[in-house]
Image (cartoon, rainbow, N blue to C red; front, side, top):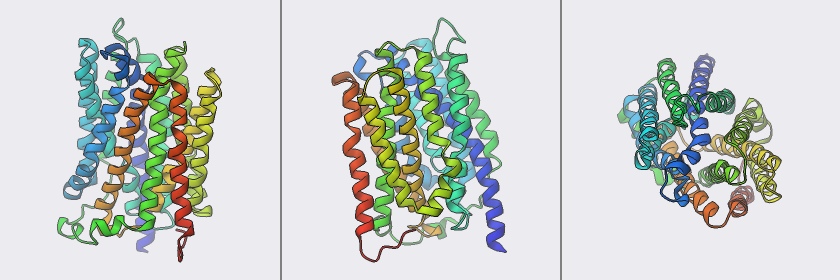
Length: 397
């Protein structure tokens, strides 16, 4: 009876968190579509054009683990609401930066948006907190489906708000992002996850023992490669398309299709994982990421960018959700905060590096170099999964 009750509550939380994911995702989709272009306008050198996106990822990487510890003390709901408030402040800081043409202020606003992103990365784990093992992959997927709405709202928002404060381009988009973050605060008040006792949640195995498990290593590594590859290519795409003669609207459409490809599969990814296993789905995701790079290397036509970004999104979905599901089987409930915190610290630490690399590769060696860089990263993800399969006495999750 308890399992049934917990799954009912898990379903409700998953729905609420899916709505929150949609609102957060709309802000980050708009940020991705505009950050590189705003950076091109404000940066003192083209080399730094992707720095606003990188600043957001640095904000995520540096606050992911502290937020996990904070939520252990104040609870999931309070932590999520506080981070959404920081996101609204970051968006308004970006508006001020655009009006003042201040690159450093834009980096600060982007960094604060990264704090919001760090919090949202725990939505999928929060949905799984009360779920039974059989419902857990579906709960994670349900949350990720919020990204479908985000893909549509975020890119359309860019198109309709880019000139709200003309001739100051993009300020309207960042103002709209602040409104969505404030709406997310209201939605997150509906999250119903009991606050755990701090003394109890501090127990469990040492973090080193949890993280040294082969399944944990592979789960974190696959998530790192999936997210790192996605950010590498996605960050460079709007700037590369502008450099190839395409318009802001062209790049917005490509980002929209990419975002849809990231989240539409979530409607069935959980079912596929339950049937075939997290490792096989993650392996398939790595293959799709390689195909995405191949599309980019085949030319600089609109369809090359579009097909590549669609494959990139689907590959990220399979790799990231597969890795996340595998990770949830490596720790006990009492250990979840530290295990999840370390995982996301590693994931967003990786994306910090790939985001920085995107600007450097694009400015120094061109669009092809960005796509070639995908291959060794994907190969590493594949090698990790094969290593786990070949280990003796391994049982699929």
